[in-house]
Image (cartoon, rainbow, N blue to C red; front, side, top):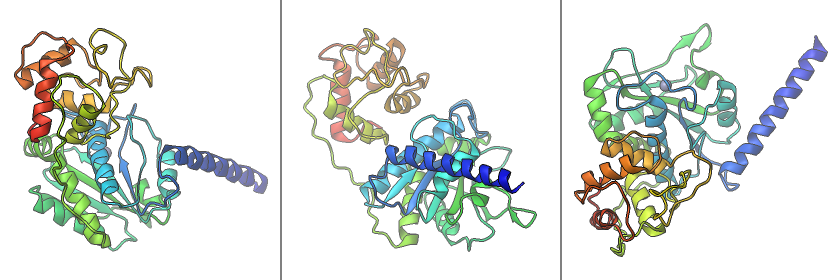
Length: 328
Ligand SMILES: [Zn+2]
């Protein structure tokens, strides 16, 4: 029995070390985060907060990446459990949070099941002040707050994100109900505003300096070529990671004229393109193809032929709108 337990704990320890090591490769740059953001679900787990506009796993990834980048801009040491559409089982997810070194965790979710408004859930062992601060911020941003609460199971917490995240104080944030029309309309229109309100509430709660997102306009050259600078400006406007690369694309005639295209990692699609497709009403698969180009041309009011030329009238209009800050 003893021996068995020892082996088990040994295995558990090596798994955790592996997780930590993998994790170190992902981000952090050696800094200990004070906050870790957790986009719920991912990969084969789409979440329950789904409707015809989004899957919970995608919407919470958009929200989380927006917050992650904003915290970085504000100089808040920050970590995140996933930056891509990746499945994390509960053991791996809670180990990443538990071992992150962070004080706090914000776990982002969208609800379902017939209610309206945002819900904040904190541990039964937590004073709930952070959850309340986040609730107040969301209310100020225009979202109805349904409740701030805890959920018990036996003598402990009901949710594993509270139970298994060690000393990290986790607040689960449900931004609204995917099966409620008011919430669906609000989240579609205002998800960035709600995400930003959480950034502000957290900074104020922890006494970190906060400033509203500025709008430094990119001053792009209107040359109709989709290169690094245009891509960075586009990513910033869409609130996705701004690395200047449109990654994970297929090698074809649609992507050939794009200077910032990257064919790796293989066929994963681009987070920027996914966010853009959602915006323009195209199928959000992350790949640039004739359908996405046509819908982009329609959205931007340039001739619709489903192709990107070099130079491209569509890209010129994209650059003009980015320069004016009127793209989204
Ligand atoms: Zn969820």
